[in-house]
Length: 137
Image (cartoon, rainbow, N blue to C red; front, side, top):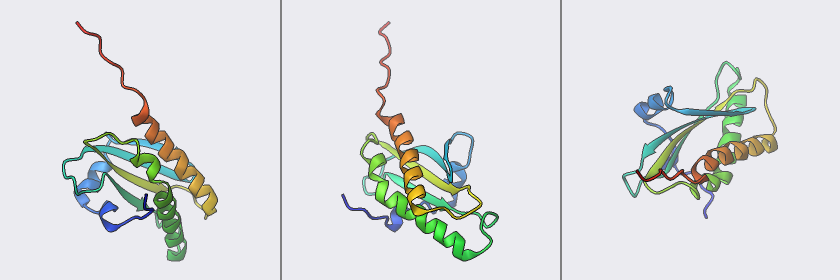
């Protein structure tokens, strides 16, 4: 597996971003991160199965240097751990994911990586668990 994060995997369309921040999306928190996940249909075989948005608020970090460092940490942690999610995603399913920084202070990269793995494992477990088979009438 190649550990890359190319431009097509970035969530950029305003319509998709707005849909991600609706009540239908699922949320999980592992300090210093919050993750929003929205399941979408995967119809285009050339499109990526997971698209990601990275957000660090100006309210949390006043200086652009600090915001950029936090975003860089988030992108790097996702890039190295995205296989945890991609390997268990069923066919015909795609995800839109947002990672939001919720801490008020800078965090170490090791902590960000660890919490990113936690969040991706939680999401992957949702797709790994066997679906209950309905009883025949």
